Image (cartoon, rainbow, N blue to C red; front, side):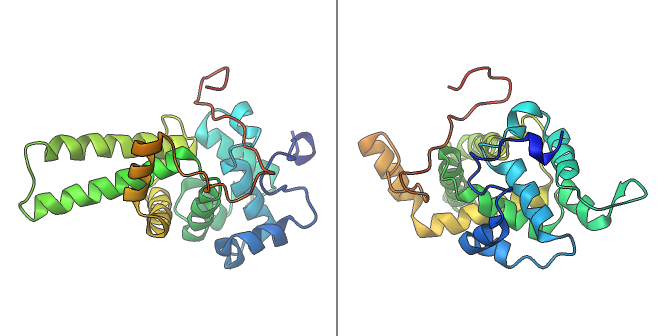
Length: 226
């Protein structure tokens, strides 16, 4: 399989477009700031193939790390004696800060419900932990903390589409840092109020306008969209 065999027309940033690199750098500042040694088009293409919800690789490569490897082969990441170089390896195992920052920034573009749920859960966990440390916790604090922690793990795996595989902590932290930046734009209390009163999130969180429609999300193993 090569890039030519993949339908990229549904991707937010079409990696086959001659303006792909310029388009993604113009939209997302983290990509514009990339200074790594691996060619930017290869790195950008790998991130898009891995984390765009409309990537066909989500269906054909169900295992998280197999998908990383396949994407790396497709974009022709540099090798030496049949081994990835150190910079590529750090991207694939989740320890490359630049890659992680761009990954989180791309995910944030989609405004997927799970990301906003993650924002609220991170806010709730932080708030509850502050209460406990200050001695203001109550009998429900332990359960809230444990349940919220479990939910954060679940949401992280859904957002990264990693199934039962756990991304390395530095990659998770990049996602959480991006979630915190998004939280500062709109307070989680606003989301909670909106959900409570209207039963849905605000309708102005699609950064692409009416012309871009995402496919319905699927969990690993699902045959049909929920």
